[in-house]
Image (tube, rainbow, N blue to C red; front, side, top):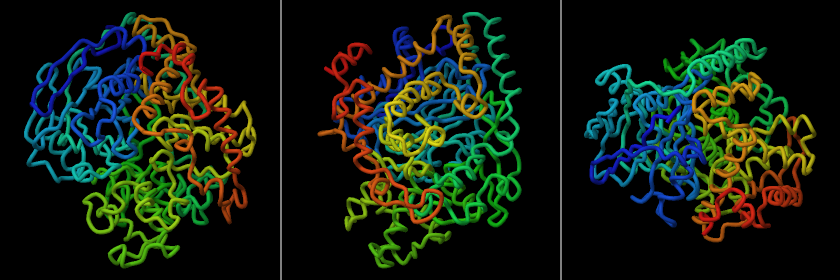
Length: 607
């Protein structure tokens, strides 16, 4: 198959065996790759009602046709499973170099099935596959284990690894790679830990077949040329995702003290130029990246090295916790990375706990003596460790903010910031109706990468509630995640404003199949609806209430900052949902109508 590794690798961890099968042509045609493959395998192979922490759940790791090719940012890999955090669909994207090596080993997807009775790690050396004992690695941090595996196997091996948080079943544990890249959201690392897979190391030596090598070369060069000539290239290379920190602070989108506001009075100390001056050593990119957003840094205060922090971590472990020193945020980032914790969910649940402490809903007696005041850096460091090892008060927070709020009660659910059980990523949505709707309807929960619409709010009016805004969200949801399907980074399109049509000749030259963006967006719509069906199948009584945002965003206007006094009324929240469901072809409870499923070829899935 042109553009593909050509095989699906299934690993039966219970039996300690594996087998390969050819990648089906119709699967590549209808779902293309990446999160498309993950969504399909999850729906068709994990039984309805499967325990997210049980043997029936599967971890699906998938590349796309752009993965490992000479396309800008072609280093994306998708991790899919039934979420141990939410109980619904989980999909998390990983950058770096792992996915390229996977394709060079001739593999499009790895499907981890069953649970191993003991800790193991998987070594793939082209055609040779070994399941090795990992008892000596269990309990160690991600950085130490990746270093050990590269030293023992060879630097050319690309490694994914979990930390103590995943081993201990923390609901928002990550899969880590390249000393600082994560598939962080939804607990994909948690499932890898439940399966007792400490790491996967891959080395491949094969080439990926392309339909037309000359056309592929020309299309790839055209994309790199467009990146090189982009006006935004130099500032993006300089600051990466931290370029948005100051902008978010100015427009009221920077999460502050558990999203109680969108502007941080000490925000300037976290801005990109400050970080660049104080801690950044050099830039770091993923496979084939001409615009490296990774920043390799040293927090001199702690003599700690870390990749980052990037914007999401600055927002969630910085301003959201009232922490104003970029070195403190970098150290928190380093701890979370080594422990294998999603920094977004960790910052969300700790921010909630701090607000509970501030309001008197938790006391030092509850927290084991920790003073959970906003800005208490040492308390944050301690909590990250306690959560990862499920010790002390960390045990209470290890299931995520939704379950913690349900256990505590006392009205704490009103400021538990999540959708569908996933902690919201780092964009405050006070009176930003497009971004609010994007979070509400995201197929994994409150995550920004499917539809980053906060700029559109500023462009057309943040408080506007209109069919046009809803249509924009749906278009973004159908189109933007296609980069995760294709196996390439979206940031060249987003930040460098690369013409998306430049990608089409590359896709055709690689796969030999001519597609239009209309075709690709239809695939995106198919995947989106399939994932909606998965939530409906797995969550008894799933309805529109699962799409509601945290009550804070429709009950409690910020007291300060750029959005002071602004709110989206609950009636407008429901108006947005009504328009969204109608435009999606869903009923009033957000269930796809039969005619929509027939249009997308999904009728059999609904049955």
